[in-house]
Amino acid sequence: MRISGISSILDNATAQSSSGATTQKSGILQSSSLDFSNISASNLQDVNAELYNQGKISLRQSGDLSLLDGWALKGVNNGQLRQSSTGTLNAYSLLDTMINYQETNGIGDVKDTVASLKALRSTLEEYDTNNQNKTAITA
Image (cartoon, rainbow, N blue to C red; front, side, top):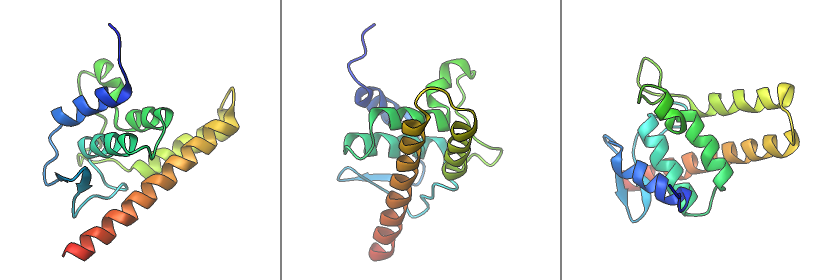
């Protein structure tokens, strides 16, 4: 089986996910409750696909984000996405954990890995801020 690219995989995952109160408008994910400190795995997949397709994150960062919500491990996790008992996860906390782990136990090119994870966190923070501003404007 040949994989043509991560965007087709992510688009497929996005199409299959149920995004509750979230709607897609002009390629921009809109939600009044989107918050990366309390986000569903399904919404995180949607944002992952959007940010990758817009060129705001790299393939590597998209893979890292897929690891956060468990989508990349879905086949070995009884078909379940990673989430807490409340059904949401804290992407910021999980990224901080990954950064701390790489800084203390990482192997290989730790400096680039940490820089990539920190850039991903910054991108999520910027996306979160922009989304909150758009929600405030439309309210």
